[in-house]
Length: 123
Image 1 (cartoon, rainbow, N blue to C red):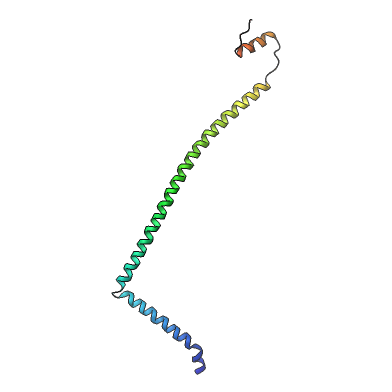
Image 2 (image 1 turned 120 degrees about the vertical axis):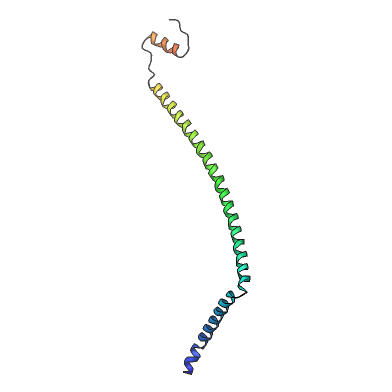
């Protein structure tokens, strides 16, 4: 029995100390000193809440700025896309005109083309 006690003695003493500390902590927080601990906790909680709110406000301001930039870039993208489509249509039209240009078959057709381009030709 003595050997068994020597083996478990440190565990029993350690467990007893932990139980005593927990009991003292429990009854200490329920007594008049609990207001003191509660005020400390309230101050720390308030401090962390203020810091967290400041961080969230900064993040929200950053998000609003990014949203403004995104909206501005989307507006620019729409303008650029519209210009691109317009230019593409003009290019396609010019390509069709280049393909459709044939030598005039008659002098009258040549004069008509010159008149259409703004040149004055005697008929």
